[in-house]
Length: 387
Image 1: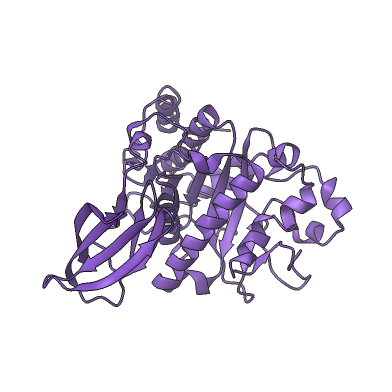
Image 2: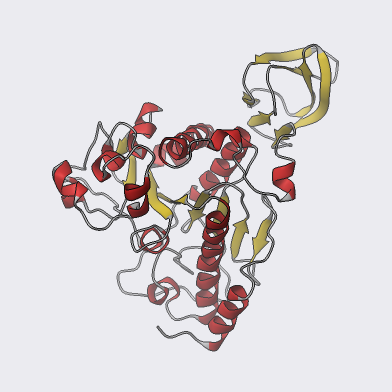
């Protein structure tokens, strides 16, 4: 494969700095701020290849045969909300890589020829996007030994359901379980041979504990799953793309990959999207504990960086907020109270677990005060701003 000198220098820089110490939860960018990497300390990687907005004049529009130039609307937002939801549940962060460029400038889910259409600036951004993913994979392997990569997309198909891509075509999904069990390639190849309960490949793809069935259990239709084991012959279906192929375990390694294509009814409404992000965070953690890690919930981060060391502190975010407020506490039970500026208690909840999601969308804009008590002892008071 041909690389120009600028691209080669960028690659060498990344290669010699793969041991750089990233701080979990912090954002890092390429030199042009076209690619964002939010460092993590969970065995989870989230990517948003097609949700970017930037259209710099320095990068010409792509003009390649058969290429698509449409954004996957609100997939960047969904990916960030999924990060927040995972943090709310665990006190730890997934690794997140976002292509901030519009798809007409860079398609980060294609091989470099179609991705950047020969533009050197676009090629460098493409390389940095995948370098960040590789860095996240290396960190997960060093800390956990294995992990899960989820490539977030949006589809406009008529059937409103999640489409989960394992690099198995619609035709092959329509075959019997015995065929799937002997299918040589999938993006979860490592998991097939190394899952905790020795599930078969077919069971992992569409059985009762498959990712799709766990989504359906939360009220989100998905294919493949126990309820919808394969798409009908007349139904379109995305089976996975370049990223799932490159960064999943099809060709080796211990990071499995799934492409998640989200339908429009999940993405366009802010409240619905945030509800879905919260549910999907639960599915991801359940999936990891079912198949990957026996004791993940006892120490989600498993790392020694400063963010992990502070992961057992009480966390309240985002602040300011225009909708949901998340609270993560090290120990339960907890009494949560919200007061207005007149000192009137307008919300109260008794929390028996270490995670809360409070809907503030009906609150008027302004300042409020959050009070947390444990066994009648005040442990925290914090000013909250409702946008």
